[in-house]
Length: 269
Image 1 (tube, rainbow, N blue to C red):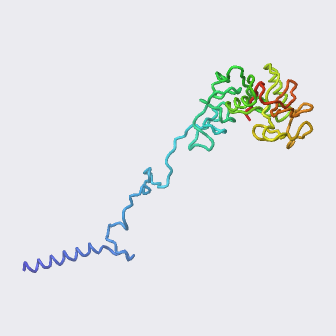
Image 2: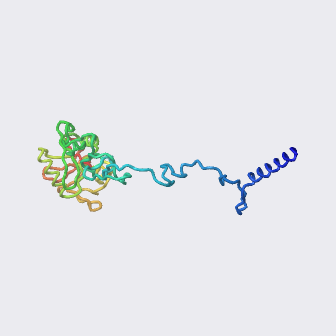
Image 3: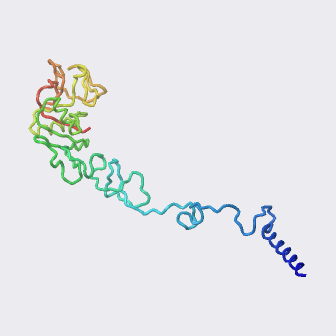
């Protein structure tokens, strides 16, 4: 009798175990065990809650608004009055303010002060400690160019002195600039100034120092590309080896030997 009871108990246990293994068929044909997931559990941060744990897996990270300044000249400093508070950083804006001239990339806080009539380092003082003896800087309000006037040197040394300032000997593009230069020259007690013009490369082909031709020929020559010139009568006459140009006290030009000494006029253009 005990043996019969044991056999019935094992049969019931086996049936119950088989039901647990097979699970319940939901009609989909999958036959997955009851209570199990359909696949492996994802460990991606894009799952529930995402990186922020709020349920939006594609949400952008939060951003704290900052103050930005428009930087039109690309020197890394903006103008205080252009401040904007936003997030993220707007195009063409930077985090540092203090630029006092956003049209000149060389003008910004911490820049090297030059003898050019400009407050290069934005400390509200112009040319402090920058001008050597005999030199002064100024700006032509008509064209916005900066100029440096210095005492005498020959044409080659005058050119080198201008290059040290990041400039060239002056180029004159119209009658207004010519008149302004003459006024500046006379106000400093200079009777002449060097011009950045020479025909040393090719005789009677007059070039500015940037390589731009403006005059072809001698006294009866003609302008190149309708460019400005102010030769006095009979000039340029190439008397001997006169390959460099200078402005006289009346504002007219003449050619002269390059080895003589004349006051210097440099221009940033």
